Image 1: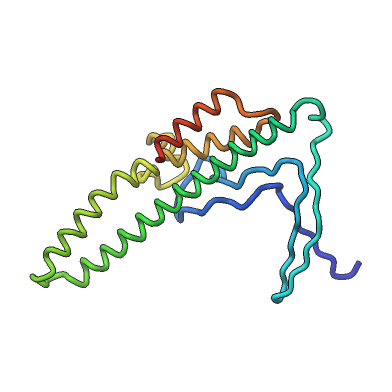
Image 2: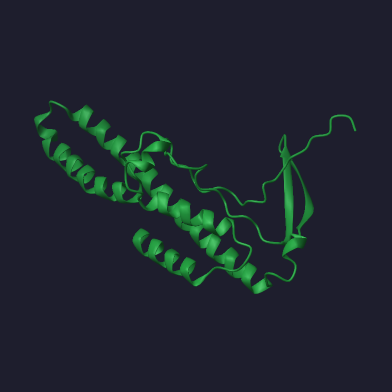
Amino acid sequence: VVGANRFAWNLRREDPEKIPGAFYSDDGPRGPIVTPGHFQVRLTVGGKSQTAPLEVVLDPRLEGQITDREFRELEDLSMRTWTDIDALHKAVNQIRETRARLETIKKWSAGDVAAKPVIDAAKALAARMAPIEARLLQVKMAASEDNLRYPNMLNEQYDTFAATLDSEDFGPTESQRRVYAYLHGELT
């Protein structure tokens, strides 16, 4: 076939929003792996789309090892974890964007005596955001090896937890449910 193209799908849903410059001990958070089922793929080129059905089937080695209910429970926990990671990343990005805007305001207002209340308010807001960001993400990390030097914060903890869900060939364990409940509570 002349001009044939291929696309290899890693069987993952969309990745969560990225945090620019974030370091991980692995590839970082990824979208959850899909469970067996029927999907639709869409190819869009030049404003025109085509769709086709796609079926993801159970690995035959797992036949009889995992029930449909366990698959649904694992998918549910994986999706809730993805949602939390995405929200955490968006929060960190919003904090950083707000801090950058505050810095711009401070620069524009430098030397203007009348702007002192605005500058003071900007500094106060930045001071309140810093510990929140530091709880969500290890702000001292400058390289992936730094996860050995500094404690893992919520983002790194979620990434590690999500990786345990990716490797399961059975439904979520009670320990995984408790870990998720803890992480979700901390994020909330």
